[in-house]
Image (cartoon, rainbow, N blue to C red; front, side, top):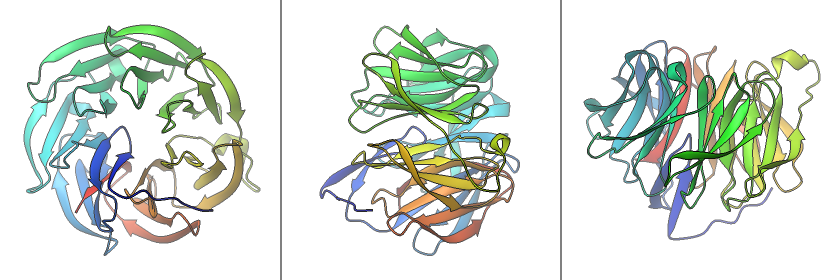
Length: 328
C-alpha cells in the first residue's frame, strides 16, 4: 500500500468531523466516547495511553470536533442533548439543543451548522452551533443514525436503520431530494473525498453499498467472508476512506475485524483482527494510524495503516463507541 501526503493544510473526516490542522504534525489527541460509563477517554497518540477521563452526559455515542479543535461535541443520547466540552479543560461548558436520542451527527464542512440524527422521533435536527438556534427539522425514515455530507456541503445523507434507506437531503432547502434502498440496518454514510461515491454500511445485511450520488444508483454491494466466522457475525458499521480515495476501512462488529478494501476496485484485500465488537473508526490527520473502538472488550485498537497491522490495544471506559482525533 502506498500513500501520498500533501503538505500544508489537511482535512480529517471522522464520524462526521472536518478538522483543519498542520499536515506535518505527528502528535494528536484521540477522544473516545464510552456509552456505559458516561465518559470520554482522552488518549495521547505519542504515548498511546489514556491521559485523562472526562465526565459527560448519559450514554455518549456520536463525537466530533469543531474545526479549530477547541470544542468537542458529544451526543448525550439518554439526556437528549449535545454536550460541548472545552478541550483545554475537559469540562462541559454548555449544551446544544437536540431532538430525542441523538445518535450521530455531522458538521457542515464550514463548521456550522450541526446536523443531528434523532433516533426516537425519526428526525434530522439542524442546529446553529454558535447561537444554539434550531434551524430546521427534517422528517426521515425510522430510526435515523448515519450522517454523511458531501465535500461541498450541498448534500446531507442520513441512513434510517428500520426503513433501510439512505436519504439525500438538500442542505439549502432542508428537503429530501432522493432515497436509496440498501440492505438491512444501515449504520454509516461516508462520502469519498471527491464526492463521487457514497459508502453505506448495512449492519444486519452484512454489506456495504457503494452509491453514485449523482444518479443515486448502487454501483456495487461489497460482501465479506472470513474463514471461521459465521455470516451472521459479520456486521459492518464504521467506514472510513483515505484522503486520496484509494483505500477504505470497514469495522465488522462482532466479527472483531476491520476490512481493508481497495476503494477503486471495491475488492476486499485483507482483514485485521482487533478487539471485540468493533464499532467505529478514525484516522489521525496524517493517516499513519487508524483507531477502532471495540465495545465489548472496552478498548481501542491502534492500527499502523501502511503496515496493515495492529500496534497496540489501549484500555478505555465501558462500551467505547465513537472516536475522533484532533490537535494535541
